[in-house]
Each structure stands twice: as C-alpha cells, then as structure tokens.
Amino acid sequence: MTAKAMLCRCEDVTLDEVMEALEAGHQDIESVKRYTGFGTGWCQGKQCVVACARVLAKATGKAPQLPITPRPPLHPVALGVLASLGDSEEG
Amino acid sequence: MARVVVIGAGIMGLATAYNLAKRGVRDVLVVDRTYLCGGASGRNGGGVRAQFSSETNIRLMRESIAICRDFATEMKINVWFRQGGYLFLARSAERARALEENVALQNRCGLPTRMVDAAEMRKIVPELATEGVRAASFNPGDGVVFPWPFVWGYARAAEDLGVTIRPFTEVVGFETSNGRITGVRLRPTRLSPLDASDEVLPAGDATTEACDEVVICAGAWSPKVAALLGVALPNKPHRHEICATEPLKPWLGPLVADLTDGLYFSQSMRGEIVGGVAVDPVPEGINQQSSRRFLTTYSRALVGAVPVLAGVRVLRQWAGCYDLTPDGGPIVGRVADPTNLTLACGFMGHGFMMAPVMGRLLAEHVDTGETSELFARWSLDRFARGDLVHENMIIG
Ligand SMILES: Cc1cc2nc3c(=O)[nH]c(=O)nc-3n(C[C@H](O)[C@H](O)[C@H](O)COP(=O)(O)OP(=O)(O)OC[C@H]3O[C@@H](n4cnc5c(N)ncnc54)[C@H](O)[C@@H]3O)c2cc1C
Image (spheres, rainbow over the protein chains, first blue to last red):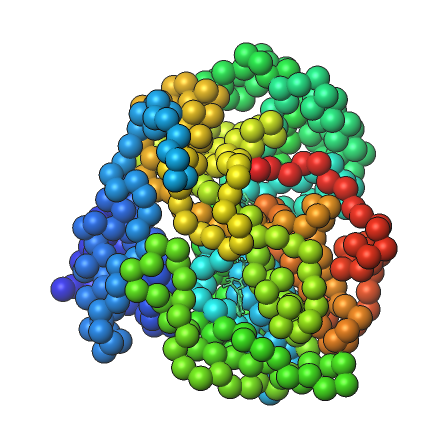
C-alpha cells in the first residue's frame, strides 16, 4: 500500500494519517478512530475498520483489535421514519 | 514521583495539566482508565455558550469563548470552532420571562444577547416551526466546536510542555498518611472485547506512584474515585444520549435549544446535525449504552421543530454521562481532608465549554494554594453549609 492509500473513504483517511496517529502514541483502535476520524462517516466503519485494524496489528505487532464499539443504527435511518415509531419497552 | 497526579484525562484534567505545565510546574502525571476521549469529553455536543442565568457562569464563559477563538493558534490544531450563536426557545410565558431576565443580566455583563420574536427566529433559522414558541433569546457569539481535536490539542500541548499522559491506567486506591495523600495506586486496563458500553478490564497488577498533590477530574466517575479516600460527593451520573445525521451542506446557523423538552441541535463544521433530547427515566449509575427510545423521542422533537429534516438520515448515536450536582453548580477546589486533594467535577452538561477557563483557574489554585471567592462559592462544603448556588439555563 502507498502512503496515500485511502483506508476510510467516507472521511478521507489515508494510510499516512493512521501511521501518524500510531507515531503520536495512539496504539489502540478506539484512539486511532478518534484521532483520525475513520469509521465515523456514511458507512460507520463497515468498509474501513478491517483495513485499519490490520494496519494497527501489523505496526504494533499485537493481535488485531476488536471492532470499534458499534454505534446504532446499523444503517442510516431517516428522522421521519424514527419519529413515526413507537417507544420500545426495553428502552 | 509526581508533583501532581491528575485523575481523568478528559478535557478538564488535560486543561488543568496543560495550565500547570505552562505555569512551570514539573512532573505532572495525568492518568485515565480508558482511551482519551473515552469519557464525556469525547461524547458531547461541543456547544460553547455564554447564555447562562448566573453572573459567575456568564463571565467565566465569556472568557472561555475568548480562549476558544485563540485555541487553533495557541494549540496548532483546528477545532472547527464556529460562532453561529445559540437560540434558546421559550414555550411558556414563565420561561419567556426567565429568558428576558437572563438577557438583561447578560447585557449588563457585556454580552450582545437579545430577545427575538417569531419573525426574527425565522430569519435566523428559516425552516424552524415557530408555532407555540413564545419568545427566544439569541447570542451571536455562542458557538460549537468539534470535541475530539480539542482534547487532542490540550493533550499534545501538555505533552510538549513535559506532562506525562497515561491512558489505560486506572486509579484503584490511595496511600495516605497524616491527612495527606502520599501515593496513588494505579492499575493497567485494556479495552473490553465486544462490549457496546465502552468498558475496560483490568490488565495487570497495581503499582504505587508517589505524589504531592492530587486533582480529581474524573467527571461522572468522581464520586467513585473520591470514595476511595472516604470523601463523599453528592454528584450523580446521569446518562445523556446524542446522535449525528448524515452531513448536509451548511444551512443551520445557531445551536437551537428548547429548555422545555431538552431538545438541542446544531450543525457541526463536518456538516452533521448533532443533537439530543431529555429522556426520562435513565438507568441508574454510569451507563453509556444507547437506547432506541432516545432515537424516537429525539426524532419526534427534531422533526416537530424543523419538519424539513424528516428525510435526513441518522448515521450514529452514542451516550455519555452528565455529572449532576444537587444545585446545578460544579464542585471545585481543595477539600479540608485530605489537605492535598483538589476536586474539579460536577459540571453538569456544560463542562466541556467551562474547561478552557477552569483549567487556568484550577492550575493556579493547585500551584499557589490560594483560594478565590469563586472557589469558595463552588466548594464541596457549601452543601453542608446549605449555601447553594443557582443556575436555570441547563440543557437536558
Ligand atoms: C451527550 C452529552 C452532550 C454534552 N454536550 C455538551 C455541550 O454541548 N457542551 C458542553 O460544554 N458540555 C457538554 N456535555 C458535558 C461535557 O461533556 C462534560 O461536562 C465534560 O466533558 C466533562 O469533562 P471532564 O474532563 O470533567 O470529564 P470526562 O470527560 O468524563 O473525563 C473523566 C475521565 O476520568 C476517567 N476516570 C474515571 N475514573 C477513573 C479512575 N478511577 N482512574 C483513572 N481515570 C478515571 C474517565 O475514563 C474519563 O475519561 C455533554 C455531555 C454529554 C454526555
């Protein structure tokens, strides 16, 4: 992969930027997510989290880390649709 | 050996550590049980405003906003600060009167806040449904930041001045002698596998770090940490949820807030509509899980306020904890016992915006040991004395 390889297409995060986060001392996936913003765009990490986890594992020599904490909804849902739903019991 | 151990690497702890180092204090250690941005400081709406009801908060927030304006230059990081104002809506005559009184006070403090009628509200936000809104107050100088770079900015600037920041390091106890803390017990942690609540697990044995001074900046966790020293805090964690939509072209100027249902929403510089609403009841204690009830409640309130948003999609929701005190004021400053402990917690739902100015004041307090009228007013013992503070502009 080249330095400009795009790891997260939604938020324009390149391999370079992930490496920079690692060099700045952010060695876990939740920190790298917040430092670079990967996984916070339209796909919410579905396309990029594996690539980023691999880069992290390779660079740190540690076992690949688990996915970032999933943030609902699973797919983007319109506010109007959500507004028309009833409240669920379990919260 | 640390001169000062700051517990919690949220915005308050980092701002305090940065300002300590800037004053020339060496050997400052900041520890956090999880990753940076793991607490409320990485989970908030980034709202920054001076529209409060108490003169103390108004004056402090004027200063904080000034610091925000200079932040990018001082810290060499873009925090996406945008001053689009805050528009507070009032739906009852009583709330409208309260806003008017606040505006008068804010004007006396030098803020340009003004009351606006429905026609002007629609000028500020053309898509706003104004039926039922009696009045609103608007301060064009209020704004929003993107919290993450703000946290990184303080962290990097503090490290450049020699501060040590240790994430994944939890305070599990203290050593004391003659009414003073002599050491902090630290245990390594790691991320918990497949856990949607952002929890951490222990990852090794505890060791002791000797220290001169301790500052608790542990946000909603502060009562737990203080309890390890036998200090009882009246704060309660209160889950607060928030969500972001897909990015839109810039269209929304201010952060709009409605104190009736706790709805607030703004547009970040990334284009997302970020907002929340009060949900009642919430689970007891520290809880950072998202609920579907929040999403439906928020969507109803937001689509009611701005019907044209019905077609816009929510990308993600998350949760953090407010750190609530019985009177809505923070708990700040040294305590009587142990004598080398300083507290900085209880910042409700507006501690992010307070941190730039509070970090400065706290560093001075810890460094010099001198106290001020402000710290006396916000001290822990006000609850025992029954000398409570008042603030009615609290969202959610
Ligand atoms: C959804 C939401 C929206 C909000 N919106 C706004 C807003 O628009 N504007 C605003 O100004 N404020 C807002 N707030 C409030 C704001 O986020 C907080 O007041 C602020 O971030 C508090 O900062 P802190 O550093 O005191 O606490 P935190 O950021 O919570 O930091 C405390 C840290 O202490 C650590 N810790 C806890 N226990 C231990 C231990 N035993 N050992 C070591 N470390 C420990 C935690 O891991 C945590 O990182 C919001 C809050 C939430 C939840």
